[in-house]
Image (tube, rainbow, N blue to C red):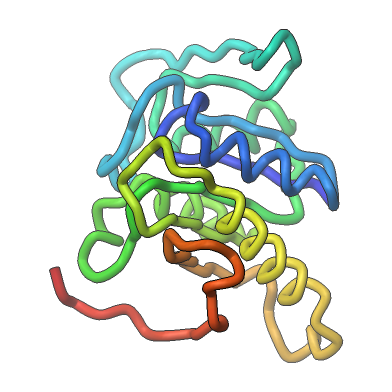
Length: 192
């Protein structure tokens, strides 16, 4: 399985690092993320300057590509240039610090990364942790994301679903794994 990962918190965020390391357990991970914090940029695209990218290393080990653009730019650049128009099997955007609920989904760069995948008919997932504390560990969020994604993608009744039209916004509470009581699917509200 080929997995493309982006975010809006930047390539050095603990969230994206934790998510990428978790999904390496099930497939080939390609990370293309903004080179800096890009929260609340929505689906904006860079049109007034050339995009630049460079390889990004963590502890002298190749991690991914840092792009001087938005999360939407990252997905388009990854698919059109790096992957030579070969679509990944899934797109993950996150793990974002701060939940994406209510009207905040309209502003979210995290959701924008997943939206770009959805528009290209690639199953896409936006993942957010319900805390703005960037020092908080994301292990629980990564673990539940892996559980949700693998369960959906391996569903025996997958002929009932159009996976190419799949877009999920996943918000995970900032608590220990053993405190989470279950998973609930809900509609988005229009609250602040």
